[in-house]
Figure 1 (spheres, helix red, strand yellow):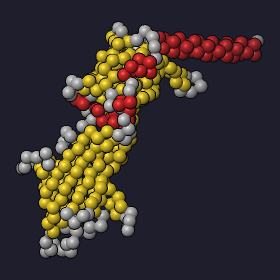
Figure 2: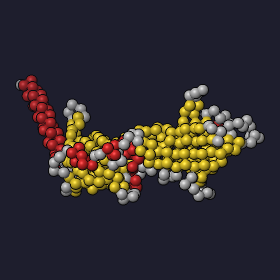
Figure 3: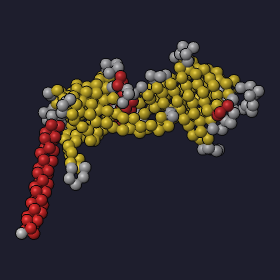
Length: 315
C-alpha cells in the first residue's frame, strides 16, 4: 500500500511540474504578445526636417522608419525589440540602422544608441550617438545627439506616413548635389614666428627662430562621418605646418570649436620611422592668436618638444 501511495505522489509531482512548464510557456507567450503590442505604438514611417538645436536652421530632410522585431536570448526566452532606420538627405545622403532599440510605454519614450569608433588627434575614441523619440499621436518628436553634447543636437518633429517607402518619400529631394563625395566645410590659416629646439644639444643653446604658417582644413570623404559632425563641436581636420625652410609637416587632427583647441598626430617611415604631434589652444592674452607646441619622437631634448609658436589667424 505504501508503495502505491509513493508512486501516486511521484506521479502527481511530475504532472504538476508539466503543468507548471505549460503554464510558464503560455505566460511567456502572452507577455511577449503584450510587449509587442505596446511597442507598436511607436512603429511606422515618419518624415520631416532635421533642425539644428544651436542655429535653429534646417540641416536637411529626415526619414525615420521604426519596425518591431524580436530578439532571442536563449532557447526559452525572446524579447521584443525595435529596429530604427534613419535616412538623412542634406549635404550628403546617409543611411543608418539602429538595432536593439527600446521603447518605454510608460514614459512614451523610444531610444536607440549607435557606437561610433574613430581616430581623433589624440588617438582612437568611441562615442555614442543617441536617437531619441517621443510618439505623440501621428507625430514623432525627438532628437539625434551625442552623449554629453546635447546643445549640438539635431531636433525633429516628424509626421507619420500612411503609405509609401522611405526611398520614395525622399526621391523628390534626391539630386546629384546632395551626394558630393567630399566637401570642404572648414578652412583656417595662421602665421607667426616659432622657436625651434631641434638643433639644441643643451639648455645653454639658443632656440632657432623661424617663420611658420599653419593651415587647418576639414575634408570629410565618408558620408556617415560628415553626418556625425553635425552633432558635435569637433571636426576631423588636416593640419599642415610649413616652415620657411621648405619643410612641411602634415598631421591628421581634430578641431574642437567649443574649447578652441587643435590636436594632431602624424607618422613618417622614410628615411626612418618617427612620430610627430601638435597641440594648439586659443591664447588668453592675445585676441585671435593661438599658442602651439609641436613634438617629435626624433627630438631628444626638452621632452620631445620641437617647436613653440604664437600664431595669428589670417582673415
